[in-house]
Length: 443
Image (cartoon, rainbow, N blue to C red; front, side):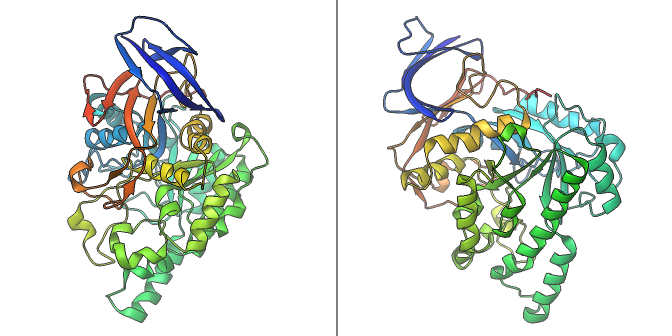
């Protein structure tokens, strides 16, 4: 199959330029001003922008075991519609991904069902170090540690275990950082004040900035002590930013950080309107935190934009504060949300591509993805920056059927998505005849 994209405004490596792109055998064969070949598919991309496919380094697609909320097929489909061509999925499924056998079972599900490219993280508990150390760095994205509240056995709160993992791991360690003791003390205080009817507005006080900083600073301390490659997920506070620097090129950093769409878009003023719909861990906090995170992103102290896509049913989310689970679906709307920031002048297209496409590839050392470059896999997204659309229940593709962005009017739209050179999405229609591939890593 030969595909030719004509006259695209290509956004890549800090530049925007008009060019043609020739795709053959899953990869980008040629990028040139005027490619004249007979192609099986030819697309006129005049007035559209061509981006590398987004790489989302943190999602929860709920399979196996929690498929009433979501599954790899439904959520990868939603991701494709949102321009995300590769995802990295977390280990807190059921069963939890705490052995190599369970990890490989998830890869088999991905190979059979995912429309996007994929990797799955190996989970850590207080007692599975032997299994963790078997993880193959060339075929698995990272090791994931929940250094904060989680379900089942996945809260790692034993300092000795953490020391050993940080000392012995040859792989990147990705962490969720919230201090459980601080959270429990805050819950006790909230219950003393409100009884069992604690309002959702207390969420950022319960899962506080202090809880985040105490845990993330410990992770950074351990990484520096053992020279471990550390990536801190979903920063939510201004206080944590000082733990990270921008003095080195990304490829040379040993400690990196991510910010998620919801911590850039929402703040605590929206709890009255949205309620538990915007209940995430870590919590959406103050406007000053949101603004500081955005500036740290622009200043390159924060390296990656991700989603932490974590769907629950609307029935589950409609519960009272303590009974409503944390998390929400975002993969279909993350890129349009960031393009909205571009449209109002808060961030450039080049910076969006850097943080959502290039940097995940560099940071995780993904092989041949994340760039519009000859020889790389043709994971590509065409966007129309002048096509407005409203997020409605009718166009939401998540299995859970809702979005925190419902009612939002975005002024840019993903029109085409290619995965490994295959045009899987075009103006709302899917060609599901080919599946995504397992990501490989240059390590």
